[in-house]
Amino acid sequence: MSKPMRQFLLLLFVACSSSYIFGQSQKINAAVVSKFKVDIDNFIGFDAFGYGYDVKNNVFRKIKGNEIFEYKNVSLGNITKIDIQNPLKIVLFYEDFNSVVLLDNQLNKMTEINFSQNAIPIVVSAVGMSTQNQLWIFNTLNQQIGLFDYLKNEYKTVSNPFTESIKYYQTDFNTFFWIDKKNNWFSCDIFGKISNLGNVPDFDKIEIISSQKYIFGKANSLFFRDISKADATLDSEIEILEKTFDKFYYKDQILSIFTGKEIVNYKIVTP
Image (cartoon, rainbow, N blue to C red):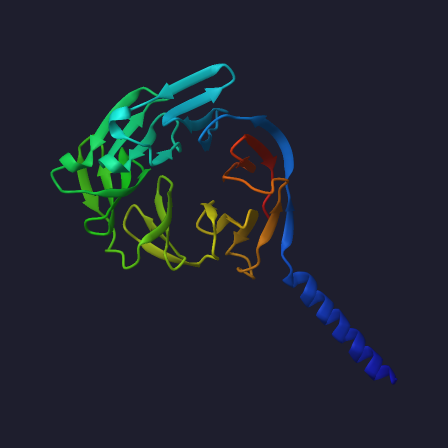
């Protein structure tokens, strides 16, 4: 074999090897920092003060050590969604009764809102805490996102009508994120600016970290994706010990896995 041919084959081998290496999913190591048994129906998450939030028998609870706070409202049925972004103003959504309850940090009721009694008709299917005494609202009557001032009882629409139904939604103070039935990912800010963030892979569970990052679960495996990377479709698998799990929660580099019988907390550093 001639020298030029050997050099060509060597370069071809290196190129193919590099393509193989960089085309594979990276792994994210997850180190267990704590685990404990639980007897609950649903795990909500942790706040910055170390309190855990869960639901058992439709009773919302806040727990740290021997401290336990509880809230129950049998008249409003089952709790649909809980927002703990602001531990001083926790949002409980009761979709069957078109109502929201705001709780303080000891789970005392601050405000109860029945949207059916609002001057402008609202039928709510999505709720989250926003800024300046406002709640994010998705009004199914007009298929639009709005903001509801719970001190003034004033409601304003901020988005155009949706053309596809919502598959998943998540909010922070300034942004309403949603994924539609076609797995298209969007965001809407408090001024009504809508951004198309791309298409997400098929998922069983998902949690949005930012407008560029999210963690999703598929077939009891967890993956991290950063759409700002050069290869925005390259996923990094998060290596956890659990073969099956009911839910996961991510905050400040701590990944919490709820299996139904225990909560396992991992320390992870995303790429």
